[in-house]
Image (cartoon, rainbow, N blue to C red; front, side):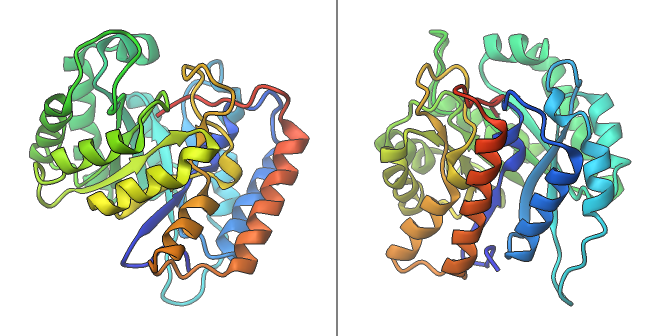
Length: 303
């Protein structure tokens, strides 16, 4: 079991896959995800419900989940599968899809990025969050909001912890109870990570605040420790660090590798419950998949 009370690790193959230049067949996606489950992963960001014109890799999300929802778990265990949406149509699809238990939505605090990525004003985005909160609660689903550009933006727009705090307080007020701070462009230093997390963590009591970080490989461990020591107990990662953000301007900037999260925290005495052999198997099968379907450019749409 990789998710224990002490920490929550969210594995993000959806984020890793959606920028790959070649489409992974549905059956291979299902086999991969089912293998993750068999290895002990219990929180998986697996699919998104967006236009196939924009993200063709995710065109088969319903078909993937139809099969994955049949996977059997040991007695007393449950699987949390996140489906990302960006509008009301995606929400309807996600709620109608078996096996999706959590709805995820990227809420940008950058006006430029919000308009470019979703063609929404702040008011429209907030109205959608309110609908997401209402409808997911009514359907018995959970909701996670990703605060995009939480650690700054490349557009010379105003940014600061107070802007992130404002977003967190508002999200809490409308009922959101899980939020992930996303370093969308991957430029935050370990000091930036620690400073922001400490500055905002007490502004929304009762809200689980995690991090979705991007990084160059050699800085990953520092960022993980910075977040953990600041109080973070929820981490998003992608095995082998596949994926990331196309705006980072650095081919080596990808998702934080899940194996780095687990080994870094374990070295500090944090109980992760991970079996090192299982982790090795998970990394090996991920390397095999990325070599088969990736070319030189390995980027993904950001949170």
